Image (tube, rainbow, N blue to C red; front, side):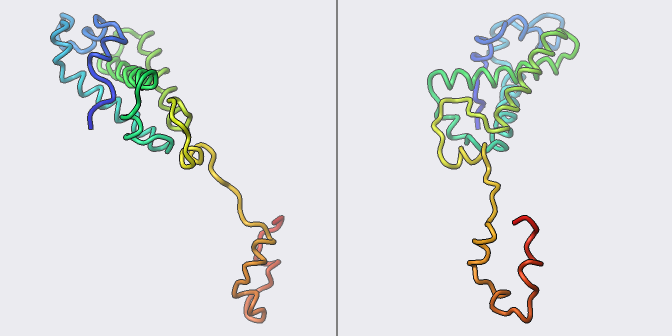
Length: 172
């Protein structure tokens, strides 16, 4: 699967000079043509997309096919999230280079990942039943009346099984 953002998206959203400094292995920053053909940026964008998918699958609100089908502002926001995670990874590649910016990008990336992991609706997708249940799981159990109406084997064979009052947890 391809990344949710391209190198052009990353350059459009962040300073190309800073990106060139962070991916350069020499003393000179990478040029615009080197940035466009960079395998390092491709790998980092794929890693960022993978982090996004991992958080998305934990949250169980979105699927990869839903994200690939995004358009308009939601697609732009998805690209922003991936580019923010990618910038944090770029700073990880060159630790200590711009400490304040590194801290900012890591905090933003963690916040986006946490929001997706917890199932928040960040994109303008309509909620289906499965998506709603991802954020609000059902924690109810049958009541004692429901349980009594089941007519289970212990109710039919009272001499062989203990009394229901002993079997049920107190307070039910």
